[in-house]
Image (tube, rainbow, N blue to C red):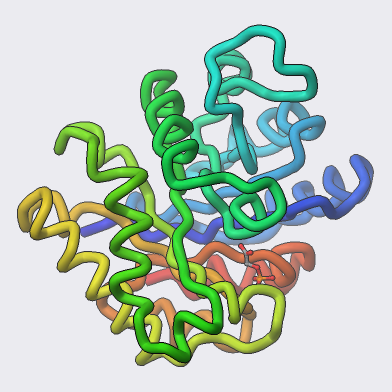
Length: 253
Ligand code: PGA
């Protein structure tokens, strides 16, 4: 069975103290994850070490960075390299969140480099894709998402693509309170899996976890995660409230 993952994306929220408190609540909660299930917390860079220390003894809890540089090292003031993340034992990194694409002009080509550099450093990229509202209204979302995948991950070998997690996040559903319907999510996830199958074969396509992101809440998580091709969620707003995110983790298959 594919890994089922509830991933929190704190974005640029919470002070250090608030973040530490929230993680403490998550760790103290009575949640038992089975072998197939993981809870991942994508926290701001300055909190990575604290977060790692807080969850390291909790089974199947992991920490992620929200971004990394596409460059190895050098004169790139303010950037954080994949090698730095590795040196802090961080196992996951979000790559290509729509906010990075939109506000920091990250192109599919740059994201391909970020994917490569994460994999080279043994970090699992949580690769985000998804269409804007206009594309959905034109009904060209399938080809749009396929192109994002083609340009950023389809250069990988089968062995390497297996190290990736995909997060489908329709931009029109992020932070808007407007979730994709379960049917819309399942339809796109099945399409992504179909595209993966065409490029990498059925066995590989069946092993890659595809998370849904966009206004996942405690109240809708179970229904969304229940779809056959949805392997959990990437959660922004609702991951900032311990009781909500605890319910979301409990909703994993
Ligand atoms: P949201 O954010 O859950 O607040 O919609 C999801 C995301 O951007 O990862």
